[in-house]
Image (tube, rainbow, N blue to C red; front, side, top):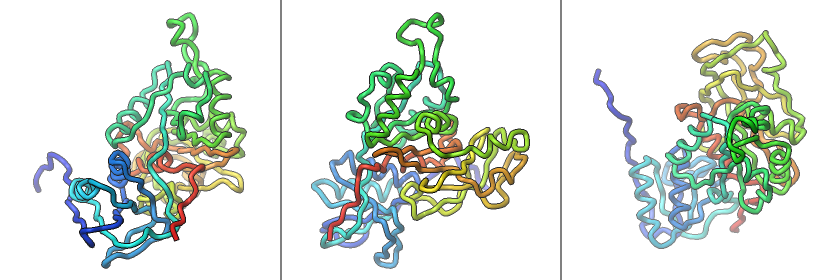
Length: 343
């Protein structure tokens, strides 16, 4: 045995036609998210394929990246293959049909005046994966007109009451007093109704469920003292047909710490569930049956927009790499963007 000092990525290659009209790129894992961001930064317009296809014996799953070739993109694609380990195939001809635009959402991360460690880790993680985003203060959210500025807003994990109340007026300078308040909640609600994506992390999901009157129950909370999970690794099962699960395996592991398990209403899409059995992979879990098979990630439509509830800590302290893509995919997709039909 030998000690590993760092993780390395095995370089992949660019296959196919060297005078490509477009590229088809493996979109799996967190590297697939970085690839999208690099392509957007290079001035390209990437999309996801929505059905698997095989090229030269390699199966590109739904969620693989497809992008028309533009000046200078060959170098970018070569870097994606070698640095991120993602195979790319150069293709000739017209783009295939039924593509889903990806990666061009205007993203904002709410930064409460009240200290919030989760916001800091989320900001660090987005920067590490080459996302462009803005930070939103309480005052900026309360001012409204959010939809004209952003397509997706992230709420870091915090109890709804703390997000609402913030600092007492007599404890800090005036510009840092208060939280979202009712004005901020109303502004977020209007943002969703007008077509925005509100992406909620762990405890902040409660705020969205209440504010938008979503017909979604947290069965973990309802179980009371019959259920207890203070911080453990649990089995997560995903629906690979859902765009929010693109680039991920059918089964993975997630970090659950006093988190949520949902029983959504009809019409709400379930992206991921806790395992049907053997939910606990490592740690402490009492009352497994309370969350077994229940929804862990859901997507609920509201007006012209949607709310994505990430019920467990998908980006916990920048360490839970296996579930980062659930947050990334929520930012990449938008309810306002229809699929592109090119045939």
